[in-house]
Amino acid sequence: MNKIIVAIDSFKGCLTSAEANQAAAEGIAAELPEAEVIQMPVSDGGEGWLEAFRAATGGEMVDIVVRDPLMRYAHAQYLVNGDTAVIEIAKASGLTMLSAEERNPMVATSYGTGQMVADAVRRGCRHIIAGLGGSATSDCGIGMLRAIIDVFARQGSWDDIGELRDVSFTIATDVTNPLCGENGAACVFAPQKGATPEMVRMLDARARRFAEVSAKHFGYDRQDMAGAGAAGGLGYAFLQYMNAECRSGIELLLDAVGFDSILEDASLVITGEGSADRQTLMGKLPFGILQRARSRHVPVALMAGRVNDSQQLAEAGFSHVACINPPGISLEEAMKPETAKAHIRKTVSGIIAK
Image (cartoon, rainbow, N blue to C red; front, top):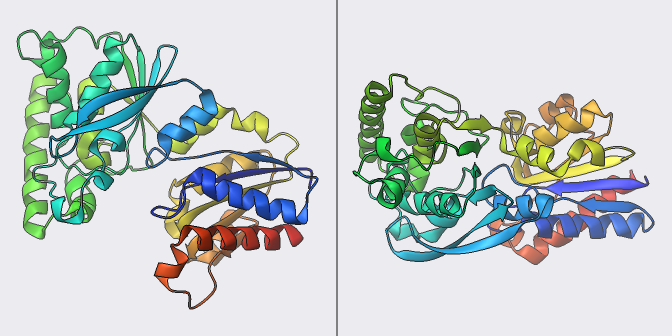
């Protein structure tokens, strides 16, 4: 093996993509010190999206003061490269910005995301790529729209905003859920944001009303488009109000980094995520990497902190499917960064030795 690509997703709450990649590279070096190792920070649009895109394309980080999901002042960043801005919505509207006691999607707002969008437009950006993931909100993007109106609208109406007419939007997400219903934003995602069953019903009803009013206003309805339910309905606001294009986050990133060219002459790709199972095959990051690599006949090894459905993963085309954690280890121990790094190094060494 002369050239090995390492592209591992973050292990949420444990390791960033870059940290996991470095541990894997050390495992490779222990077995093949002469191998060329290419480390690629990756993200599907959620945690680590901004850093992954910066590593892929370069650019300048812009610091901005925004409102967090509870309308408190907070510092956020987005990336500017030429006339393109890359936004990670979790930097302004993320669940990790709130304590467990503060989580309440009935009141959490995406206003801060709108402030980042408006700031990028005022700086002259004409293409905005928004990574949707990790949001604390279920407000259908109403907060984001309000922030943009507050900055640009002269009569307090969305129709008065001319600054967005020449701006194109792309949303990056692996979520294909619609806005409403049993598979919608509220029913599927709101409980993990602190919603009770009653809150879920209220949030879904609120989303339906907003979509109905919006459809009457525009003459079209995008609530059922793939991605509309992403980030608590932020996907819907981008699709309905900004005519955004919805892309798979990992596909978008792989295009930006020129992954197909990097695959040339590669002997192996090592990817991974915190938990791998049959849902990995439903458009998640490792599967996106597998599809690209298979088109170039490059084998892909998959590892994760927890593995289920290993036979299905192998049948899908992964050359190796490995759990980095030994049987019986406690979750507390497995989540320690140094433990996870050591286990990644050992797992990768084992894969290479085979």
